[in-house]
Length: 258
Ligand SMILES: Nc1ncnc2c1ncn2[C@@H]1O[C@H](COP(=O)(O)OP(=O)(O)OP(=O)(O)O)[C@@H](O)[C@H]1O
Ligand SMILES: [Mg+2]
Image (cartoon, rainbow, N blue to C red):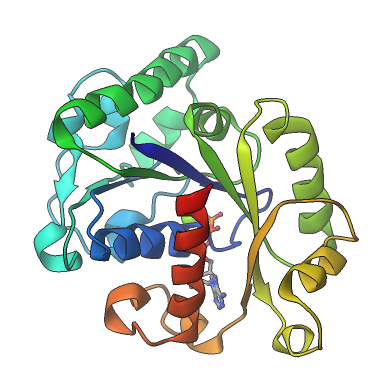
């Protein structure tokens, strides 16, 4: 049975795109069939990170009911996956499309939710997809709520800003719990000196979250070399021995068991 994993956060820039892309590649390298969808219509990113040129069809078209999902998906298995399949659905980065998506009304969003929900069955039926990963917009806008509602697992990524931590706590208690989603928290860009203090990882993360009882999956340090690449390097493939990839492998295994 395919699992839908939505990667979400309260604030922007927490690392959702980096994590969802590398997680998708790791699963594909493990022999899984993966479908990664860019649902961040506010600031589409995957097309530029993956350097997909001449894309003609977008996830926008699927949600608009114009095209079938199969027409929208770009198959990157040959170039980006060692064993399984990696299919990617891109969000349209044109200014026109971004403005159009931000002006959608509730009725449209309800229809879009229906399409996201049916995705699992249509993809599952004849494409044998193991994981569907949603890269979402931060915060509580409709497209992200739709992604959360249609997901089996929500991975929430938080940075160390107090506003992010507080907002994440609220979202977990008031939103994910409401939808009864399996939720896993990833603390990202954690200061190295904090991680080097003695103690169990989970206890340290708990301390970061002001001792609240949240389901912490893992903590990832802030790596200057990741920042320096400007999002151009696909670490899971290009630097598989990087400590970031080791942690991500651990996260992939944890999520498999959720
Ligand atoms: N652990 C890390 N160490 C260093 N840099 C990181 C780390 N995680 C993410 N980054 C960097 O932070 C920046 C933001 O990451 P990313 O674009 O993945 O965030 P996002 O949550 O998708 O942002 P948005 O909300 O705008 O979609 C990128 O430059 C990325 O390379
Ligand atoms: Mg992003």
